[in-house]
Amino acid sequence: MIYIALIILLIGIELFYFKIADKYNIIDKPNSRSSHTSVTLRGGGIIFPIAISIAFFLGYVSWAVTLAVGLVAVVSFIDDIKPLSQLPRFVSHIIAVGLVFYDLHLFSEALWLLPIVFVLLIGWVNAFNFMDGINGITVLYALTAIVSFSFLPTNETSLPLLITMGLSCVAFGFFNVRKKAKTFAGDVGSISMALFLGYFMIKTIIDSGQLGYILFFCVYGIDAIITIINRLLQKENIFQPHRSHLYQYLANEMGYSHILVAFIYAGFQLVINAFVVYMNIKGYLTLFFTGAFLLMLALIYLFVRKRIIRKMVLKNS
Image 1: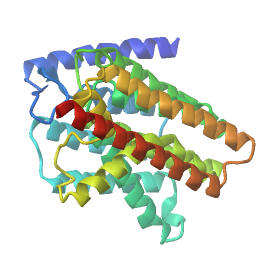
Image 2: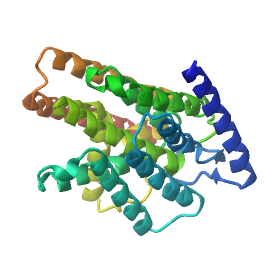
Image 3: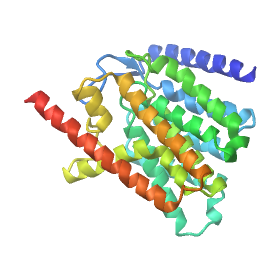
Image 4: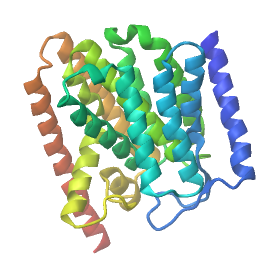
């Protein structure tokens, strides 16, 4: 019953936020680099940090993680309304990562490990944010990760937290996973969710001792990293908005439905996650397998990307 009440509460909060966003003109206007064509309410992803706060009051999550998610959410929400410089955003990310490290007792680990985890977590948060470009992709991918984490025995005690965050995805998805979205997540949603997922990935790896679970994020990771490398090779500013991710090519240049592309990304990742869990049960999820599997996926991605770009050239010629 508590989860039924929770989903009703989250939907109610989302609807209340819509009234505020509409009153104060918190909107996302399309531009030349946007994947949408109409004015849409921005910041609907505020429901994610709100869900974390609810989980805290229910005793599902620590104060450190709640504060970390809340901090990046507040700064990101301000940035959604009035763009901030890189400094306050980066400082909030550093403090939030420090809180995550504190919660996971990482400060007691070897010093050489901390900068590696720091760079990976900061990179993940920004990559997840960069990937938030079409209707449904962020919430469906996040829900895929949450469902996958929920099936791991090592996360049994964290199920109430995962269910709460999953319900926040359902509440947001009801208004976002549609041809004409009622709202977009905004930075407040994508960055806060990215930090939560990053925290939970590190927690899962520590608790299980299995680094192979990093494959749960491989679809986003491969698309983001290869796109960044490609943009660097073309001497582009990687911090500027763009439309060169594979999902953007599919949705914008090739004309596929945003929702279809979002489901393809989430569905492909879900299949991979199921395979990863199976391989771990069989005892095959070794470091070598993880690296080899990532390489194979990267090659498949490059092959698909090359074919799509070729089709785009032929389409425009």
